[in-house]
Image (cartoon, rainbow, N blue to C red; front, side):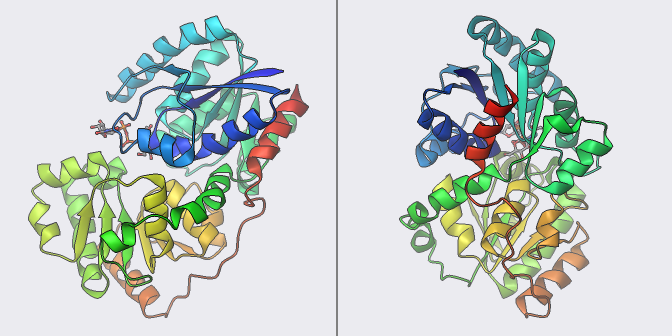
Length: 366
Ligand code: UD1
């Protein structure tokens, strides 16, 4: 029986842990899974609603660290997590993704000699100005089992000198949650609530510090998006960071004067119902690039690079960068059908059964 601490902290972690926790509970003679929530995200809309929508049991431990600078947040998680590891003596700690909670918990375990499994290992944007890229590189370098979503990730790890026995290509566990929840999401009333007709609107998410923390960059992006919204209404569930900056930079009028509709951050099922009916998604999120790929929805990624090149290879995701003219032109080309990016090619092992392979890999390596 393996005692596992499954770590969650920020919004993109919940849909990755949900299927793993469920599968571990199902195999009750092999696994004793416990959940640790670091509290990196704490608003009901950024955290609690995901536990409800995804059926995740309440955390066994809650560190309640909250927001702070990177150094303070990472240090607070480490300080609060260490006594739990010492007390619980898990066989493995499982971390997902690339947020501060991921690296903080991995470091604690590496120093205590507790084995770490990293889900979504090996992704690289090769842009070290992204905090997530630092978290990815460091977490991978100290993990004992590197579970990957795509073969390019395996190649990245091998190139960095990781021994092949530690790497296991298991597929994308976030897609387990997507397939599991698609039917449930049909019960959501979000499209009616926002008076939306399928394929007659776009969805926008934007929260990367590189896009929303600098006034000029954010303004250029917003101007391009306002133009696009003249052709197709854009629904914009705004992250707290983004919402605060819209106020701070005085962009509220620009938004209300356009056909962009700003709404609160949505729960998992409402958001799925929203983007799954969209004609176009515009985003700087990592997860949404993958979710639109799995559903064959055209996606424009408003970043200069992506750690998820497979989403581009499959054909639905286009990396447009942050140049307003390029964003406008590409969006118009997709809307007019000039660029076709809705061919649904699903990457290998994005099949809804990744959590099973993760559990198998943990048992095998022991
Ligand atoms: C974090 C992750 C990022 C991920 C994103 C998803 C890191 C380095 N970044 O970024 O990879 O894509 O989560 O959302 O781990 N805030 C609230 N309520 C909350 C949480 C945050 O109001 O529940 C506000 C706070 O003002 C906080 C700010 O949002 O300072 C940023 O939160 P933080 O967790 O530091 O980073 P994210 O931008 O959310």
